[in-house]
Length: 433
Image 1 (cartoon, rainbow, N blue to C red):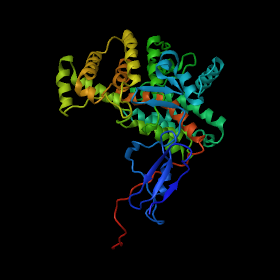
Image 2 (cartoon, rainbow, N blue to C red; image 1 turned 90 degrees about the horizontal axis):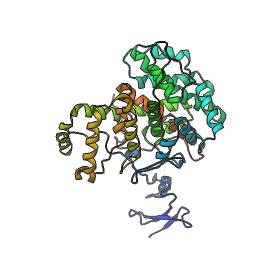
Image 3 (spheres, one colour; image 1 turned 180 degrees about the vertical axis):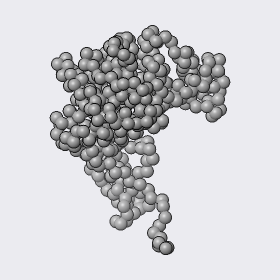
């Protein structure tokens, strides 16, 4: 006998499911193109049954939250922060203005931006305890490990950050983290380079101050070329948020336990640390180094088709069209190379892109350049070493992580993250001593 069970979908769009095991039918409400996974729990063989679950390794088709921060349409190649197209923000905005936008939902007025910038500049100096911590690492330690440790340690110096229910307190910690992630990243670089730490300067903008803390030598103030400063600011904007990627979903998952923003962000840095997430632009440079010359490209691409080589920096888990950030970075390359001279790898990169966009093999597979394809070329031109690339990514992503963390705390539907599993291990068995 067939029975109909309803989850309140009668007044809107719905999905009807028939369980062929029992003959029962269930009507589930569809909202924003989704059904609630917990509604599947009513689909049971008998009353003792736990109920139906979904099995979704790597969360390929699971929405874990509702968010107003970033819109991404991978099929159309669209990326927007709070509704603003990434192309317009990269052209007209600044990194700290975008950070404000991500955090508060609207672009700031002139006074709001001035106050926001001043507050962040006032938090930029790192405590002496963190200078001691970074100095204690062996030379050659990976800077991402140093940055992750320093961010976690920074939280211990601010026990008031545990009061996450206080919105004003949260804002203070957010500003401190956006400010000091750049300072600590620069300190990690200076430590490995065997150079003394450089104090932040309030007379410079965010990107220029970071370059100063990285590259100042001697007593003369570091004065970076404005074209380089602008290119770095654009790169930071492009990395500022990207929906529910590995590191961002990690920040949300850890934050869902009501951990403070320092612990949550340190966890996000750990997610970004992995080569499948933050290290992709390093792999692009390694590929370009291996190809070496333009004459070797044809043979390399044939190797890709034969499965003997991997085309790094092309394709994306979400984008099935040209990553809008890639075209913006390609233009930024031109600005940087006007100052530094053209990186010889650029010619190889441009030719790889041309072939991939014309060759039927790659076109059919929708392998378009992503944000990592050109960003490494800029970092290398600026003199930033390979192991600092993920640190640059983390500095840019910090406002997005913190905006997502703050949004998650204000979402009444969110609870502590706790995925289910499908147990496939042994049944009960006696202990044999």
